[in-house]
Each structure stands twice: as C-alpha cells, then as structure tokens.
Length: 315
Image (cartoon, rainbow, N blue to C red; front, side):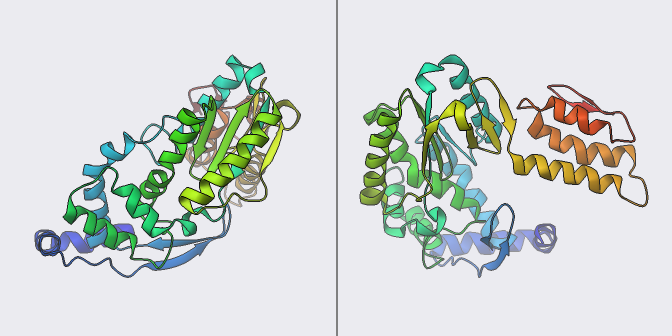
C-alpha cells in the first residue's frame, strides 16, 4: 500500500507538493480519512493508516523540524521510536545497571499505563506541545492533526509515537529529578523501576498513580508488579533480565522454534539464502541475551551449517 501510494504521488509530484504547500499556506489543510484495521500480534490493536500523500509526507516534514526540539525534552531513560534508543539500547542499559549495582537493583516495580494511546487527552497534549512550540500556524496545524480522531492518538501515525513520548516527558523528569529515582526505564507505556527494597517501590507506586491521574488523566493497569529481581526476572522488551544472565521471553523463543520447524517441513527444501534470511533475523534478538546455546541446539536441525557469534550469523 505504501509503495503504491508513492507511485501515485510521483506521477504528479510537483503538482501535489504545490497543492500541499498552498493548503498549508492558506491554513486549509485537513487530515485525510483514516484506513482502520486490526492486528492481533503481539496483542489485538486498532491501527490507523493515512495515505502517503498528503498526510505522511506532511508528518515527516513536520518531524524534520520538530524532532530535535522534542528529543531534547526527552529524558535519557525514555526509549521507543527515538533514534538510537530502540529495544536493544534499552536492554543494554538495563543489563548494565543490574551488573554494576546488584544491591541497588534487588527489587523491581513493573507497571503499564492502561489503554495508553487511546487515553491521551487532547487538551493536555496540546498544552504539553505548547511548552516548546510557539508558532501559531504550526500549533494550529498540530491541533488539527491531534483532533483528527475523536479521542487519544491513533496507533500507526508517524506523529503519534512522538506525541506519546512528549505526553509522558515531564512525568519522566518528575521521576528522575524530583523523586530522585536512579534506575528507571520507559518504553512507550511500559515502565520498569529498580530499587534496593520493596517498601520504596510500593510508596513510589502510590505517588506515580496520583501523578498520572492528576496531571495526565491516565491510570496504571491493575497488573502492576513489585518483586525480587532474581526470583522472577524482569519480563521487559522481549527479554527476561536477571542479575546473572538475560533470557529470551518464552513466547519469542517459541516463535523461533516454530519458525525453524516450519522451514524444515517445507516440501521443497529452502535454499541457504532463505535459511539465512529467516534464522539470522531472529539472531538479532538472540545476540543480546544468553541464548547462544538455544541457537546452537536448533542448528542441529538445519540442513546447512550456520555459525553464530555476538556480531552476526553466517552460513
């Protein structure tokens, strides 16, 4: 769908860009109709998709200007949809903290924000946006995009991921700077906090609930957890973290094993290149944890020899 939209746009590229420019200049731009569909992995969610032209072109143009401004607001412990701050960068930071300070990271508080994207309040978001952006025409445009859905921010919009991080940015600063939380990571609406004892975390949970409720109109899910790290492990980012080691989450390990079994059951044997594309993509997950034995075990079922190391896998 994306490539088709690019081709259609490119047939009349200059005229399209001129029309977009005029609509922005005149203040008449309106967000296009969303194509809404559901996905079911890793969980059921509604995805909102806009056409390549004019909307996605405009969103990327906006972020070319706003990204450095908004990223400068984000706390260094904020991850997700930020350049050089993806899953594996966050995982590396968690592992480092566990290794460097076992006593200070004995207990974990793990919380999720309930229905995060659909619960983002438009008026509060607009107020947060205005803390850094002052240009009235740009603000009017951002308001129009925010109000293009009745409530929340739509999952699937390029701008939504930045809106979501910006919405939580001052909460991040409150935790780190006002409350003095040393070990804290947020990946979208998933939050992990580590401390030397559970009483500190239970007290902090009460304050977090109050802050999110009173300042952002958000609620913490009831499935929050406070537990000793080494008894259960921190299930976060697709990994399970312990002080001594890091494992793949069970569901991801099962998907990998099913993928290998499906490859081996093909009537026509996959080529070396097909194996490399399928298996080595999973190695991108495995190389950041202690699962090299899993990969070597699976390798026994491969018709080709695949060598794994910390930097790459090769046939």
